[in-house]
Amino acid sequence: MLNASFRLDPAFTVAPVSRRTFGSFVEHMGRCVYTGIYEPSHPTADADGFRPDVLALTRELGVSLVRYPGGNFVSGYRWEDGVGPVADRPVRRDLAWHSLETNEVGIDEFMRWAAKAGVEVMYALNLGTRGVQEALDVHEYLNHPSGTRLSEQRRENGADTPYGIRMFCLGNEMDGPWQTGHKTAHEYGRLAAETGRALRAAEPGLELIACGSSGSSMPTFGAWESEVLELAYDQVDYVSAHAYYEVIDGDLGSFLASAVDMDHFIDSVVATADSVAARLKSAKRLKISFDEWNVWYLRKFEADRSYDEWPIAPRVIEDTYNVADAVVVGGLLISLLRHSDRVAAACQAQLVNVIAPIRTEPGGPAWRQTTFHPFALTSRLAKGNVLRVEVSSPVYPTARFGDVPVVDAVATHDPGSGDVTVFVVNRDQSSSVDLSVLLGGSYEVAESWTLSDPDLTATNTLEEPDRVVPRPGSAAVATDGTLTASLPPVSWSAIRLSPRT
Ligand code: AHR
Image 1 (cartoon, rainbow, N blue to C red):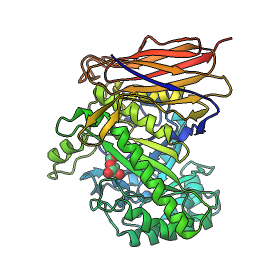
Image 2: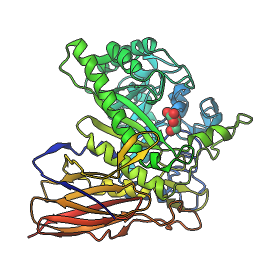
Image 3: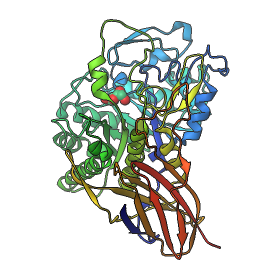
């Protein structure tokens, strides 16, 4: 048996919980859009062709923000292909995923879906094959009230009032050689600055996101952020970060510690952005938009990838997640919350079918993957302010990150209700952990959920959609101002405490 402890004090806050931390991502890729959110031939489809089961699960997941329409897809996308009468829309090649895009769903359909789902939209602009003019055009279509060619076109297409999108990504992963229209840091930094300047002239209040490097293992990482931000610092509010994690060579210990890598990644981007601020003598501080993160078995995808055909909505990267993957997703959310002072938005990639918490069968049901649960519970329970937590924990050795703590945690405090919620992972593969938390006041356990299973490879499937679910428990008890709980091996838990009355 192992022991871990920490103390909580609502006076020591990191920052308010940003609702935008609970973002997701819908890309025109695989079956995320077609037979994911949209399937007009489904027996339950609504009048707009959307799947109500997916809409209901999106709401239950607690998604606040959705990035759209890509991803790598966006770097070759012509937004105007997806507006106006559907019968007139062209079918195009999507070079990013070697598929055909029918354009049945475009921005107007997606905005209707987003309104039904109750989510804010983060719109990604194509700065791969396109530039300043096309960015201005799509902005005019989306946000200009009326009286111009493109705003009137939107109104003719059924959207009388402007969509009022606030957040725009200035391209996607532009340092990736796989990106259509891939650029050097200098080329991209100049384009991002000029696009940002023009968009701000059109609408000063926009929140603009510069592409950071597409991953912390890229050779360009660090130098890319530095050079791009030197050129575009004044025109942007955020720099993006993307990270995907998987078990490499059977090394589960390192995989379970993925949040250590995410912590380090965030700290490095913050340090780089702040060093540019220092060089520019700017008092402004950029935020991070962690607009792609998840578990993704990328090596398998690369090994299986085929370029022989041009399919429509193929089954691409439909990873089936297990218990260990869900514990890692819960851990990554802990890392994102802990950095709420600088990570102001985050998008789990993606929402449906494509490395997603929601899976569907065409013509059939939708179900929750294991990873759905830590996201849904964190989104529902993280309220108020994020508290500083210093965990005293045993460590274990990992091949990739050295010694890492067995237990990782974060907590939130809601000043309105007085509730405190603890989110905690046990990464040990064989031992439970006795957790003790000094609460600094008298609380009772209002609810307690643990996701764990003796079979770490257990998954949720079409046949058995609820094989892995969080269960009430972890023997959480609050007495005399101390919370005690027993955390099973490889587990993620959320424990909400209410002040005793
Ligand atoms: O989410 C899948 C892909 O991962 C996105 O299209 C791309 O931006 C990233 O490399």
